[in-house]
Length: 263
Image (tube, rainbow, N blue to C red; front, side):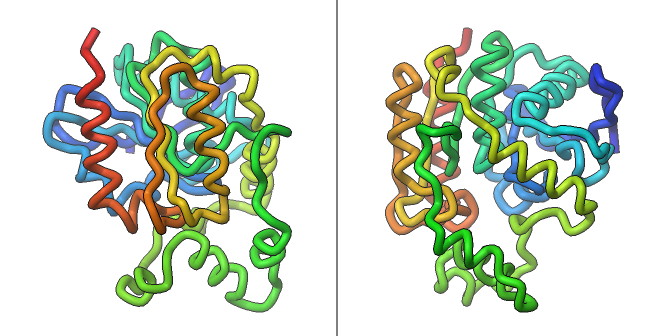
């Protein structure tokens, strides 16, 4: 698996799929590696190639026990784009990947042609936080209880019954404990509210109406804060809308990216 080295000396593993000329960078959720996208990645191939990478702390990338942040993850993304010789890419980030995408588009506008923010939030005091009931469900200590709670936040019962797994969105099982803690802090400390008006790339905000893990009320906050952003809510969808509702979400994203004029 190819790697690149970041300016601070961290090895980042990256993956490229598809034969298309138009590059699309896919950014995964917190404590997940590139396998987050496995079930839907082929939806974007054709006239596009897709790029992913394993966040520091996950997959085949280095796992230093040092502070992580969404701004730092965005710099890791820049290192990957540089390694691939990609000057500008379309960027699609979901969950924490959407937070990383906000940093990337606001701080490095020359590298992002079009932006899709999925099931994410601006972070900080302006964000709508998950409820205490949700937090308690994810903190259960009974074996398997927290995992089941996370599954039910990601997918509807009907989808879970029809799709028994394996599931690629529940976290990288090979992450060391220190990296999980670092990812949690990075996501929790994200606050892009002041940066969002700096995003100049055409932007689509996508969210499931029944998302309790990252409440759907964050979607209009983002859409209102990013100039000219479009908003699309998928009725009944939970956090992993991009997988369970791929028949809606993938064409929606592709149609948006296709309508953005080439420079």
